[in-house]
Image (tube, rainbow, N blue to C red; front, side, top):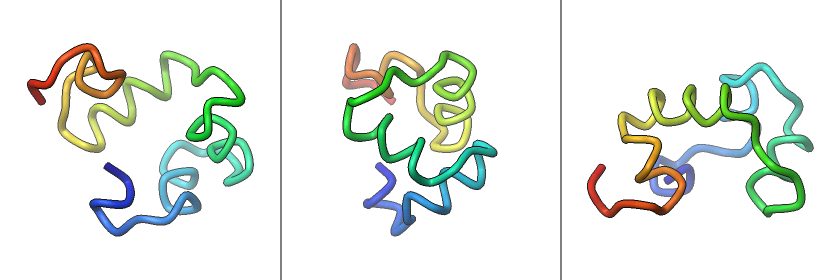
Length: 59
C-alpha cells in the first residue's frame, strides 16, 4: 500500500514517529510491528486491521 500511494519508507516512518531503519525492519518482516503502529497504519491507509495484516480482502 505504501508503494501504491507513492510514499517512501521515510514518509511512513515519520508519520509513525520512528526511524526509517526500524520501519524497514517491520516491512521486511525482520521485526514484529507493535499493535499501536498497526492501528495507526490502518487509520492512515483507511483500511481495517484485518486487511492490513492479510486476514481479509475487504478494506
